[in-house]
Image (cartoon, rainbow, N blue to C red; front, top):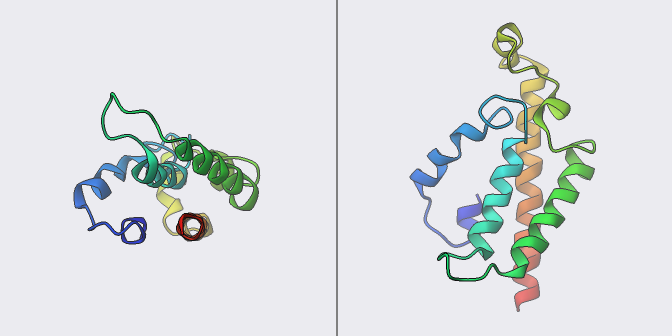
Length: 130
């Protein structure tokens, strides 16, 4: 979705690279993978491509705005998977049951809501740029 909104061809390697971010970064329950993915979008938009370049200030503006919106609108005050979904990813039985549970459907909903926020923010940027 974000690659399309940014006018870029889908990049299979980039999509594959995001794989380990699920279940709160490598199934650790830490930062929600949706948060990491959203921040990666703002990096693609505004970050430098060479070490000697400076970061564009908008990378911080949009990243911080997103984090605030995620916490307030989705994460119930948190960006941590374990707080939001309530799964102990070290408990094999809970993980086994996760994919057929309401918690899994909640995770899918959160993914959709995150994409919606990112899309709104990208559209806002495009409108402000004109």
